[in-house]
Amino acid sequence: MVIRTDLAVEAKALWERSAEKTTKLDGVRAQEHDGVTLVEILDDEGAKALGKPVGRYLTMELKKYDNDIRKNAKCLARQLENLIDMDRGQSVLVIGLGNRAITPDALGPQTVDKLFLTRHLIKNLPQQFGFCRSVSAITPGVLATTGIETLETVRGVVEHVKPDFVIAIDALAAGDMRRLCTTVQVSDTGIAPGSGVGNRRAAFDEKSLGVKVYALGVPTVVDAQTDCHMIVTPRDIDARIAYLSSVLSGALNLVLHSEFDYDDFAQFATFS
Image (tube, rainbow, N blue to C red; front, side, top):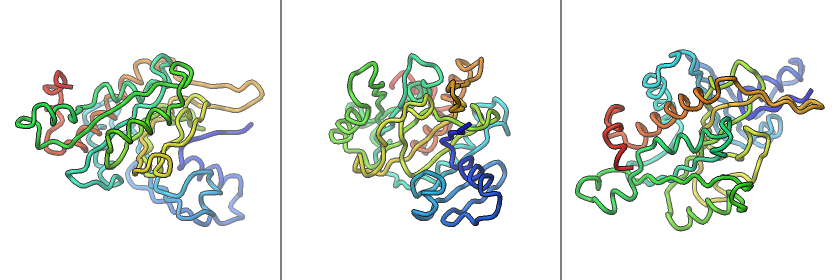
């Protein structure tokens, strides 16, 4: 059986298990503290071993705070601040990847639905919102429903909006059932959409879009590539996606709009 995972922390563990500690894993550095693990792929050797691009991959366990959206969002926001390198005046485009009609793949679109978007407010109401960071978003859909490769759509938006950086949100696949809907991965390497449903498309990264791309995702399926190609997802996936999208959007709102508190975003929802 082939175990497929989008999580760098799992890829590292799988490599070490297959090597049976007889070979040193060069080009990779990892550290763990209080439920947060940072895996750094330092060079091409490390990238080849783990099957992932050079960069930083941070994973955070949500189980620590059970189902407390506020606490998990604030904890994730602190981790995002450590990984995302941004100046106060920089603009951002958020991409909600995935298929809204398929619940395990709807994390990206549902997260975008809850973001405080300001690009239009800054333009039309500068006295009230001119101090905010310019944040815009797109949910480009998938090839099967649009007939257009998602990368083509996003590239066109990036060329028009000209953000300073992009944050892409997508569902991921895990190798361990215990990580389903409980682990958030953030990386500074971009993302290949469709991972969570076994339909990987062209990568969204700095090379393809021309700007820095950060990726934010949660494993919503376990894909065991056996002869029958089993894809497993939780029975209560609808409730879990709703919860996870609230945590991710809450964290992003806090990081992108540091001048506001968590409770402020509810009153701004009507403006978005």
